Image 1 (cartoon, rainbow, N blue to C red):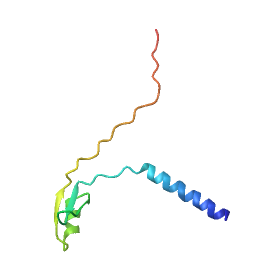
Image 2: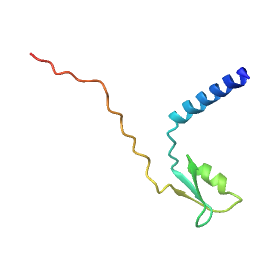
Image 3: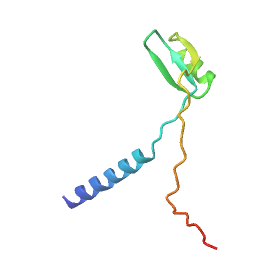
Image 4: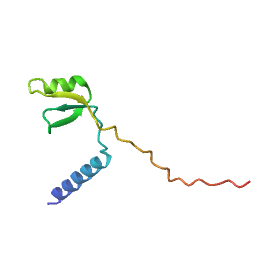
Length: 83
């Protein structure tokens, strides 16, 4: 019973640590299969073409812009020097 509880704590720790660092990735190419079926998960145009070959569809650039990542502000206090 104790081993099961320890295993559960370890698994929870890894899943929380993994999801905290997940920021997502921007993929510049999309495969459009029909009017409502789009998959934007390709790094290169060739990957997109290989995916739609035999299935049908078109490859197009992702219409959504890359996410804007703001730099985090430093919480370090800046002291003014008095001369």
